[in-house]
Length: 365
Image 1 (cartoon, rainbow, N blue to C red):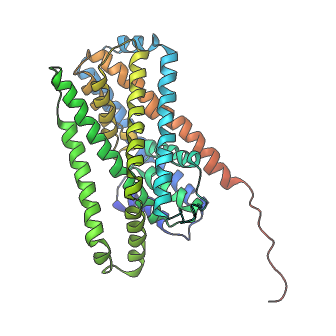
Image 2: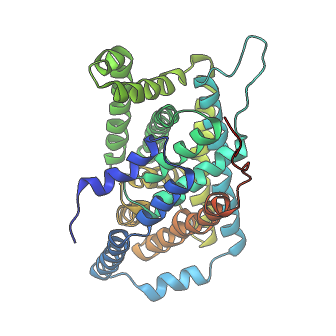
Image 3: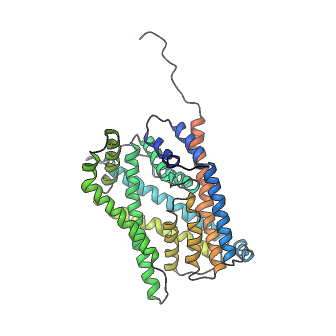
């Protein structure tokens, strides 16, 4: 079995081509996310995680005993808190898209945009695809879904996601700094690698935005006309969504969104009748977010090992592994289940419905 870059690039190419119908894209997507390479990778990674767990002498019986004795009410609260973050992210994306498309007029009227619930649905479906596909294809797919519904260009929609990513990484960096300072002030030691990772990712994204602002369109004029058209819409979607007057609200929503992520982990830990300090919960939950950007399906491999390692700084390794497993049942398995249902109902089922088309005109022209 041979792998080529074209295998991965073909996932994205069809999203830029307006000649492809919704059915074409979804059919192509299904073929990719349920492909043999994806299944093989998940199998190999699962075996690797299992082998590592044996190597560090985890007691599986104790781990699953912890999970069996969990408090289901606390676990359910954790799930609800987690999915509440989708609504916050949906509202934030709607504000970014509204700002970028200049929908707010002098009279205060707004053109039609999807509702906050629909934006949240796009995000959930995107995270579902990220959980089962390579290279974070779900991010591109949710931008494509929004562009089709709002009649915008895909590259323009993708630009709003870049702004969203800058907000996320900047917020993660700020919260991590506060949390690690709180940990060290209490006399505890924790690695600063997460701060370095968040700082590097944030710095690169900000530098890219500055480069876009100063030189983007000038350099893009050297490209062929088709590529220039794609880039110019991406440029517009990215920079136009960065309105200074909306920034305080966007920052507040970003903070709330990530605090809800930490709230999910807090209730997961409570469900297992374990204790962990609030600063450490923030560090672990945000570490989870950074590790999930690894472009494997669902960040598999990196998230499980990284989260367990971070938790093991403060907890026995079996308790740390129990939390990591139960937490992944929310951030990975539940997203596959609920996101998969949303994908089937709102995407696959829709294209199978008979369309109401007018009969072709058979008279003389």
